[in-house]
Image (cartoon, rainbow, N blue to C red; front, side, top):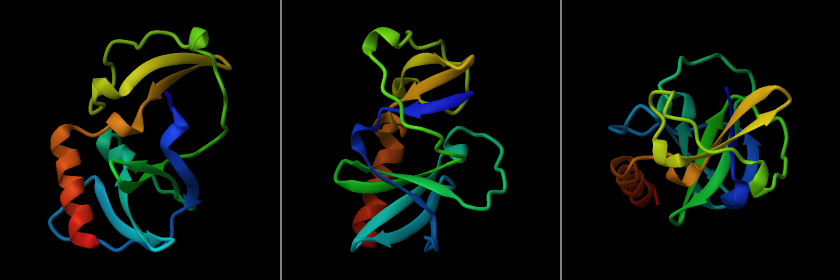
Amino acid sequence: MLFCDRNQSNEQIIILGEVRKLPSVPQFIEGVFESYNRIVIVIDLRKIFQLESTAMEDIKVIICSINDSLIGFIVDDVSQVIQKTRSEIQPSPPPVIRGINPNCVYGMLDEDDKHVLLINLEKILTKQESQILSKVDSVTL
């Protein structure tokens, strides 16, 4: 299954460098790093989706601005940026992947004989997880 984000809030895509680990945070938070004098909180999407971890050489991160915080989402790969019209987006499938907040899925595409699940990274975390991120952001600044 492939995932796609509506990239309105995306600021950049980078190769992840050194991350400072934080004590007493949930497993999905890998730590923080500084980018252009701003703190970026790093989240592992595989852990959010409860998927098995894989070893990666160059770890890619999509940096998004969410609720005045910079969040870096670790992704397996970023293959391309595509533009689609609303009419090309199919309705959301029933929840089929454990760990995915159903509120963040807003549709599906069939792209090159593959199903692409459309997710909104701004809604991927639960309210409780978002509150934890706010605390992490205020402590690290």
